[in-house]
Length: 143
Length: 443
Image 1 (cartoon, rainbow over the protein chains, first blue to last red):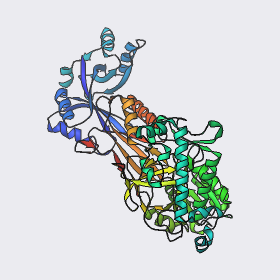
Image 2: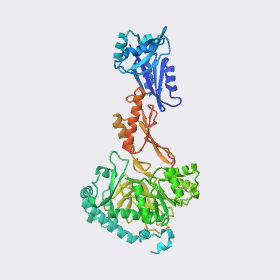
Image 3: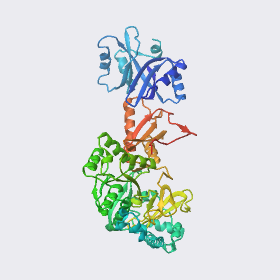
Image 4: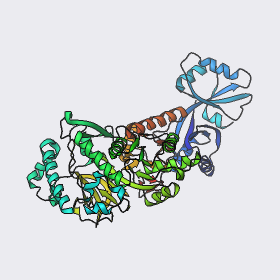
């Protein structure tokens, strides 16, 4: 159920996201989802890509500082209260969301949110118990 | 004493008399003082005695000034290793003042003064200031930091002993400095040259015309500076700029100073004996050869320094100065034989930065030290390449790392530095080694 996400360190300067993007394009790797967390001096580019192993290898080979982290892709009904229900399932469990962002495609009438939890295994168990659907990597990439 | 009469009237402070001692008489005095200080250090300072023992020499072996070359060197780490009082040659009841230099790993370097030492210090500063054409009636603003740093109090006591009016402004607060200069009719400034450059710029912003102030003399030291800075300062204000040299280990400011000829800095040789050595072999070099300046304190009581290696690279200028002083001169200091940087008067070694990074991160990331100058103040930036081990994809964790590195460097160096996290492999490497220091200060 865990999805491998590539996180990349970039200085907050013009052109610093372009180089890794170009590299991935040259290697035929598709960026399916992307989220940038930044401050004035640097940023962290988080990406879900079509082939994370290849992406990690080519980025590392070019000297980019990256980390592969495990995130969860959670199906959320595309209606008011959809997100609140999911967060409700985690309430009081001590499971913490480190960050989250939306996957840019719908799956039928379901939206997809990418979560990074402090304890992914506990989150999987808790969400599945609450009947919330988590997407496997192949499912996510085939949307 | 004819030479005094021939020199300009402003040089005639009574304290300046030793500047004109006939050479033979000066040598006799130096030898007599050298023997006394070596004896004192040998009797009182364990480190010095053990080094003399190792070489199989005693103070009796010092029969001529040339015999100084037989004595062991003292280096900066000796002061650090004997922190705080291990090199004192006086008992604490005779020590009237302690100073300490910042910018060393963990512990500072401590220096001590007896009443006699403080008096000698004041007297050499009087000779510096008199040589810069200052006298009773001048209003001297001291904008060196007052405190453990020797700059502020050293210049202060000297200016007072000269009989001038002292404005102890200490460092910082440029607007207030300019207000004092203007309102008090200050005629001379003692500060670092870069700080004065900043005051020039700030005065222009405030609409104060430096050239219309009564200011006529600047005594600048505590960092290396160049003829082009002198020309700039003198063109932007109506002062005559003098270079003053000193270091805490020897006494503080006042080891040497330019006279009105601006042809090198006279060393107050009756108190500080200069030698030039080959920094690689330690062999003494004749006057006129470039090498490392080594100084021996001839009259220091509380903490004599025997053949202290300053790491400053210079030359003892051959020949007599036109001013008539018999004191030998050194060329202006341009570089050092080690990698020490002087940032806002604080000594910084790149190795300290390396140690701090290593201790914080457990591994040594690639880093680079970038020196720039903004508003007349040296700025030190440490760029640290983020390694995969250091990288965390939570922005909060990265900020925490950033703060941790910042805190560690501030603590170790004792000055505020700017830490930048940069991408991997962005610091230029030549032959596999990164160039550690990039100096973009326009000297």
